[in-house]
Length: 455
Image (cartoon, rainbow, N blue to C red):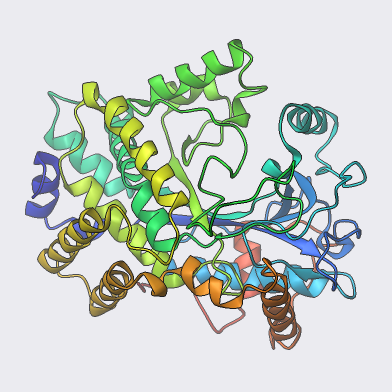
């Protein structure tokens, strides 16, 4: 089961480090009014400025709020940060404002010219205007949950020390580990869409020219009908990844290098051309729809599954370099097929999903993970066997007149009330910017310490 690197990690009793990823979350949600339309209110004054507040910003539209958590060592810590910052945003909203809990936006007007793009300063605003000119406006509006994963330094050091003939320096070892993670998540993106897809229908005016889906699907957002630029990345190496994006800009397929919105992105140096020289510092996973059953758009068990899958990918044999693009092109086709299936039906790749979850179960047992991981895998196994338990299928129970608006508004109002009743009071961002350390102190005054060991 294990690769040579995986066996080294296992033999050195360092398996726990493969799941000790530093984790950061980025969750997007639209601000709406009580009628379910995009809000006409400005970015909330109580949370300072969207261009300078690192914890609550915007993305594409001024209504598209994005919550960013500080890096956390454990899934539960990341969730506590997320709940805290989510409450800050909710309690800063204008009277009557809510957060739309679904990935696909609320009903859009036919004339979108009055909808404000994100206010990021002249350069970024010019980019957004050019992007909107080139694309169907609605393509920029889907929201999602992004997970940032950073590999424990102990693993990088262990690999470098024991494979000196393979890796000349820390940079090579580090980039290699991030490359196999990125390849693995792209390879199994279809499974994540299958298990967690939650955007089965679109609201009014998301599609143009009276286009209609033939039937509900697993995930509009994760399909070719979803977000933005359809530009494939090259995950053979960090250098190949950078080269492909730069060629896309040169060929005028991409406006800027940051237009690349692949389902996985290597992150580190803000200057993309320097990334191969300084090394990836983390990967950003962009393949999860919002989970409307959670006020923050994602659940702790989902984070734990992602961490388990990441650990498995590091420990098991990687793709050969000359196979990466072929395998990932096939994985993209599989994902497109999965996205377009009726979520109430048996998936074309049900047997593959069964086999991969069984492999994860055997892996979790061998490295002696806790019972919470077995419970997660049992639940996901049940989803595979019972299509009606899939998130998108469950959402169909709430469709009325080809819309989820009534359901979404009910959930949004419930979450808003809960935030307003929260016992935790926070000094707002209006007059100051918080560092990560200051934010931690303000959010967890004596009742939670994110640095303590927890799963």
